[in-house]
Amino acid sequence: MKELIKYSLDCEAVKYIENVLRGGKTLSRYLLECLDLYKGKVITFLPEGIQDIDIKNFEVGGKLKVPTETIVHKPGTIAYPIPITDSFLAEIVQTSIFSRESGVCVLEDATRSPRDMFKTSVDDQMLVLDNEVYYLLTHKNIDKEMITKTISVANSLWHFVCVMTSWPNKPEKKNISNNDIKALVKKTQKLAIGAYDGEGYLIWEASRPVP
Image (cartoon, rainbow, N blue to C red; front, side, top):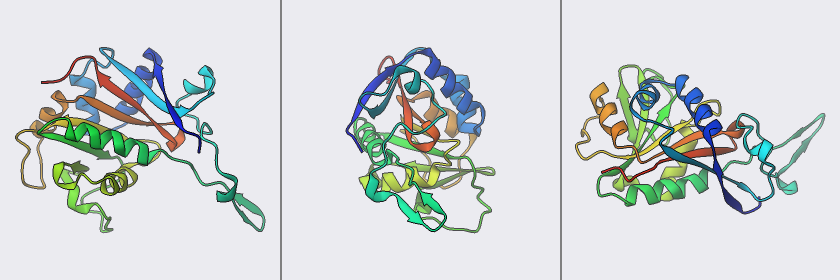
């Protein structure tokens, strides 16, 4: 995959972010209610040379070139692995958490319920709000491998929401409340939203540092 470069986006990106949040759970709903997304900037990271019309086509993939050696040929079909930028986002998340003493990252799982019996490699990071599942990353589990795993588990391709914020009074228990969600939303500094059919992300950042 070619080296990724930063692209600055406009209000069309904010509208896309709003649309993704409307399909989410409590965290997404409070982000819509509490943040003025138009008072911030949105960027994305894609290979150089992407045309503007394709950059703004946030729902469609194909922006990242698939290395020829990763294409799997089987009788009657050809499998093209989806190139993703999880590792790149993990670096942004890691930097954001370290930037504040109480820095955390919370990811919304759009498909999982606490009653689901299957286990994942990031269950220790799980938070539960009624019938909703979230994942919490803190200074205690900040290594890039764990962040990348958590991003992968939380990403349902059609819906991905990742909040980079601070949470000075975060509860020690697994079960959280609506007030807990509101508290971390109000401190949101950055927000990553899935885009390009699971290949990449739009990253919103508040126009001013959040105290």
